[in-house]
Length: 169
Image (tube, rainbow, N blue to C red):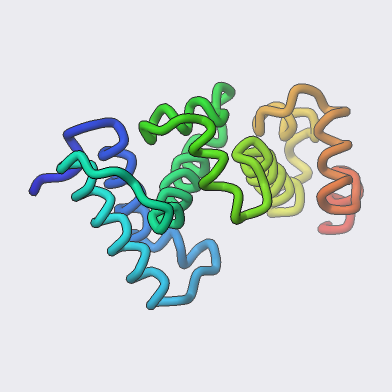
C-alpha cells in the first residue's frame, strides 16, 4: 500500500510517522525504544484502517494523540491554530480530539498554550534573549497581548518574563 495520498487524515498520520522516525520523540525526552516501536505499529495500523475504511478504536488514542501533538508542534506559529484546525486535519470531530487529550489532563487548547509558553520561555532564556523584546516574543507565539502573556507565563513558570530572562543571564 502507498500511504499518505488518500485523505488529509492519512497524510497527517504519515507526517507523524515521519516525525517519529526522524527522531522528534528523542528531542522530547522519549527514550523508550519499546514505546516508540508500539507507536510506530499503532500509526501503521491506523494507516491501514484509514485505507480500508476501518474505525479508530480507543486503543488508537495514543497514536492519535501523537499525531495531534506533532501537528500542533509544527504549526505553533499559525495564528489560526486551534482544536478545530487540528481536528479537521486529522479528519475527526473536535469532541473526539478532546477525548484523545483526556488522558493528558489538558484540553487541546491548553496543550497549544503550554507549548507556546514553553517555546517563549526557551526564547527568553536562551542565547540572544536580550536582542528581542518581551512584546515581540509574546506576539511571535500568538499571545493576544503582552499583559496576557505575562500572566500566563508567571502562572506557568512562577516568574514574569523579564524575571526569567534576568535569571538566565
